[in-house]
Image (cartoon, rainbow, N blue to C red; front, side, top):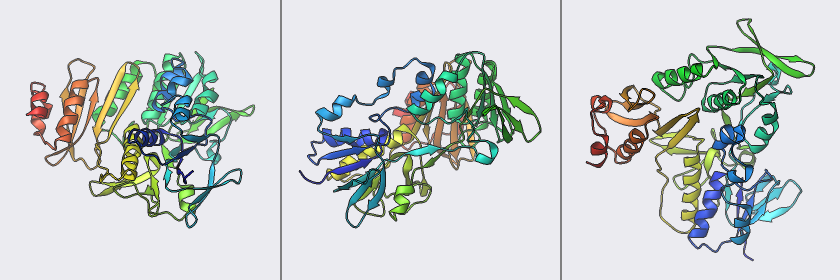
Length: 406
């Protein structure tokens, strides 16, 4: 048997690579190595339907386990790679096994940031949300009437707060910035979700900093803010972003900078090694970025399979994201970094709107809140490189379909 292509990390990028590799009829053998005991699975539902108990674990799997067997893909789950030997084209597993590779694809993902230990971040009852195991550990504590403290007003924190309220918990959410979603969204989007959560009974605090978590009987029981206020809590969920898993790449001497640096074909500084998904740092629009999104992971994994099959392709996919909170759906297309103004387009109902981000005359991104048409046509407009005047975008009488297809 020829030397395999080894995929390290069993996530969305890995699943996408394998699917495309097989659909292209590539005969190179594959070995998928993942630290978790599961095949690649969807992570977005973790903070929503899986936490709510509305989705069985098996339905998270992107492909059922038998599919990998049927496709002849070798798998090693509950296995970690501890070393890459670039000169020998080998990886070493945590049980000391040495495995040769032809190509190596790093889909190592990212991990949730924790509060520092000196603030009480390691106390029992303090959780992060990144994996099935995380949800399985915390779910038994999500009981009606209990007090949940959410630290972080990004999408993960907001989604978890929404799920907790739906389960009947009392929720306090703390955001250290002046407003929730400050790093990723315009003030209007922040305002919408602030009001949404307040309307569902979340005690949402902005410009709120934790001084320390408080312990009682060996478990977290609350938090003290820098203001001196004490907030009681039965459990704490920390949602303050993620960091790329680059330790393996760094130890191997690969170029890293907020992720594993890759070129336009997702190739690292070592030509036989590629990287995809949350762990990759790539160039877009003249700047280096790292994206934690299903779209980016899936598209990069897909592209690497096509590159290895000999196709002349480059990574230039349009980013898109989504977030479900209560009965509200936020859909985002494009990247708003560097915008200098935005306009608000009223939606079809009182609970819908879209935010259009511009840099000068150029349309960069759109936040569509309960506005699937604005998202769909806005996406086509951005993909076509069109830049409608801001006043046109803001006018609800403007026919977006005509703008997109005209």
